Length: 263
Image 1 (cartoon, rainbow, N blue to C red):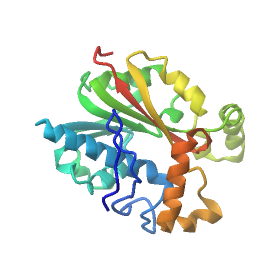
Image 2: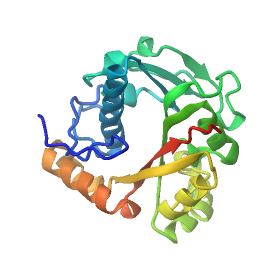
Image 3: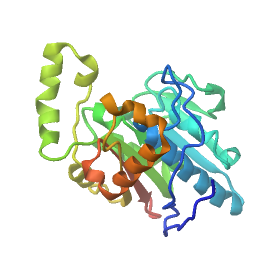
Image 4: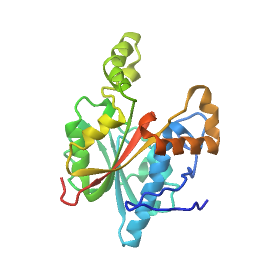
């Protein structure tokens, strides 16, 4: 598929994204259009485009995936046309990568909230942090670390679950207490809850980075609607709604640029 493309000044395609392969791990049944993981599909195509631009300039693209989990971003990146020009590193609290761990150039085990002192500053062209910050008690050092390891002029991508206000306040203060009572440890592990507006406000408190784009994912998904994830039209509907109405989505992905002045 070669869709018509109009590229904005940041190099973000406004094309209709389409995943290039099914996810190999993370589901008993492989689904190509899994909305729960669609953020990785879209981001992989963007990173590949940035790697292609870097190749034209005669250099490679370095990527750090913070909280990489079993490897969903790597799974999608490998299918992209400019994967050979990407040097991807990963980090997490434990080494739980199931998808081709040998493809990571480096792997760091540690806690983002402690600052990853073993990673040198201004090292990576692209830093990705998906679905991590909501699990941390304190966010200032974590965000400062993500900014620190991004090169001046580089790209920082941060994704979190969101709620429309004031539901984010109920999610932060009431739901964890109920989860502990009902013994739902996964729900209780979320220490933060954001609306799109509160999360953008948090990021804008860091002057070294500027917001380029906010895009939403999973505006209608799951439950009885899950079988629709086998169909491309359902994927496209969710993606378009996510572009138009990010504040109403379940997840948001913020793309930021680090200033050339550094951190």
